[in-house]
Image 1: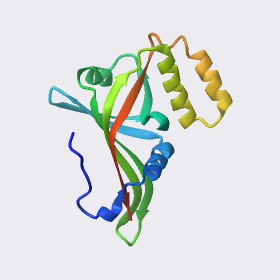
Image 2: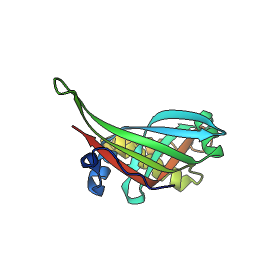
Image 3: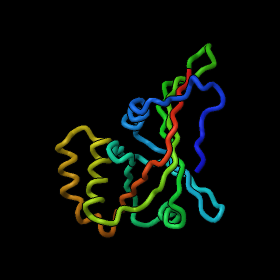
Amino acid sequence: MPEYHLRNKPEREITDKAEINEILKAGKFCTIAMCHENEPYIVTLSYGYDQANQALFFHSSAQGLKLDFIRQNPDVCATVIEDGGYVPNECEHNFRSVVFWGKMRMATELPEKKHGMGILLNHLEKDSHVVAEKLMKSDGYYPSKMAVLRLDILQIHGKAGK
């Protein structure tokens, strides 16, 4: 995969890793583009960010279109956007975003599935008691009802507006 960079207004490019991590930690939804056999598919999912491993975790039904696409082609492109809103009378928009490329796969081993769900729940839920209760009750769902997906980030770029 070639390395890309902003061509217009390079002052908008976010290169600071800490700021990129901040955007990923603050976000709640990730839009993921997939393709197989020349057919595109895009989906928006809530996620958890595993900063130590530069990965995002998602949960999903154990069957479905996105899983079919991932099995055929694990290469994805995704984005997370922090929307600061339109600025009236300035024809500008405040935002920060990251676009990244990576490999997506289903977690297959129970420890990784639990790790992924822990990352996801701790990212979205601030009450640690709720997280612990959900994780303890969810063992029965892992084998058949739920898939845990992992997106390993291989390349990432940030951009800010206004």
